[in-house]
Length: 395
Ligand code: GLY
Image (cartoon, rainbow, N blue to C red; front, side, top):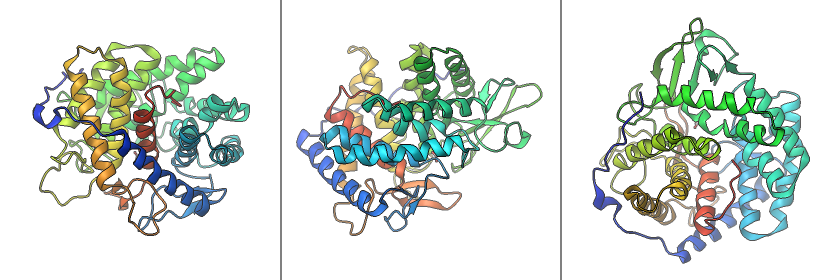
């Protein structure tokens, strides 16, 4: 069932507001300083997915879902400054992606889009890098190897077809743009057909009637019928994990770009309004949206950063006369303003990340109130979008 678009409950919370260009430029200066520290600290390898005490350790490109974000941050720095040093470091990463996908190292999961889009697709789009293009197409093939005909979805985790892992997760809405892009560059529409089927299986099940989202949804491996929603990283099965809700905002927009599907636009507005209705009064999301003003639970600023990117894309496709458009513009500026004022590490000694106070996975006890590399990436993307509304997407 498609959710209705909830009304914005407190319109005054999103009244006219703008962050100054000067402030955005200051945030860029702070971020570039952190990126330069990162280049010095990480050398030719990668930051871990989350920091400890706001300091990232290092890792090779062999595991997890986060490496693409560091390469992507470098692409944003390159585009924003024109400084070739960022391009050179980003390009030096590409062989590690080729090796990873060719040798199938740490890829027994669906996160091919997160890994290969901000890194290899961006390398191809920005510099014509053919190695990046080839690696990204291999990653798309690998992603499709997880496609389940019964249920028409891409299995997120675990061994393909293992009944205990027969589920999709809302995060994958950001992985499927890799398939739409592959369809475009190869001329093989079957990538896009399966991506769109996965999109529909996702939003038809993870979106609840009130426009909050389940994190994951199980299917019956025999019949392909949807079985039940449950959480992995949220507080409760029936709550809205903050970052999951943000994936449910930006993800549908990315399908909208390729498919111009009105249902995707409607889902985007519904999930966005749910988030805006459930942000605390200082506009910084708690790690699960069941927490609000007065709670001492950790925040997740990456929820803000991802949702802002979705809204910044969304307003490009909304009619000027749509009353929600003005609300979204004000909300984006409010959210950016507070991230710049309170969540950048201007005075945090030793930090080598960008965005403070992110939460990776509280139930699993990892990356809580730390830098997480995806939030750093989406903060840079949001900043880039605000400084240059004509920015051409990597996704
Ligand atoms: N995609 C995994 C996460 O958002 O933590």
